[in-house]
Image 1: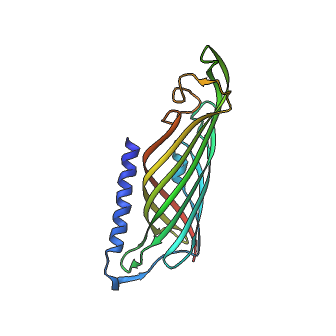
Image 2: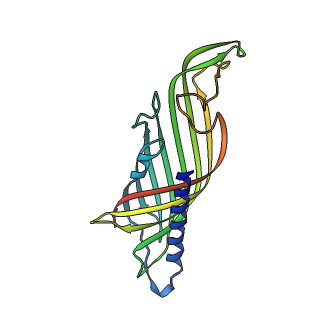
Length: 224
């Protein structure tokens, strides 16, 4: 709940920054920031429940517009689970930048965002066999696949030297699919996914549709 409130607060703040930028008088507009190419690193992703080394690139498309892509490797760097987990995260955005008012030091943007995240965990678990007539211990693999559809809004600031700093908040829907892999057709995981020490994905086996908030911070090296 605490993490949810923090994300909600920063999402609202990023929206307010965007509204302030577009509410200026037209004659005060200077230009819209949109890099030819920008390379990015997201340090906040390293402190997630599923830590991710996440890098991104942004490239200019049309006037006041750009496309943003990120790819990350998910690993259990902090050994929070018994057997560890791995996976990947892919994010894509199409951004619309607002003309920047002369007296404003940040560049506001908004746009649609799609995230595909997949996490796999393996380990030994107790399963029921043959219509739950007996139990057996075997190797299983739990797969967590998330598709997120967000509307994002944020700002890019000058940081230090050639680097910029970006903060953004996103709101939307997540589709989470939890499944158990590599077990025989007659096997049923004893106690369900959530009660196993292999990996606890918050939700049990099946497909779940959830409300989502996403918060991101990035360090940017732009090539203008």
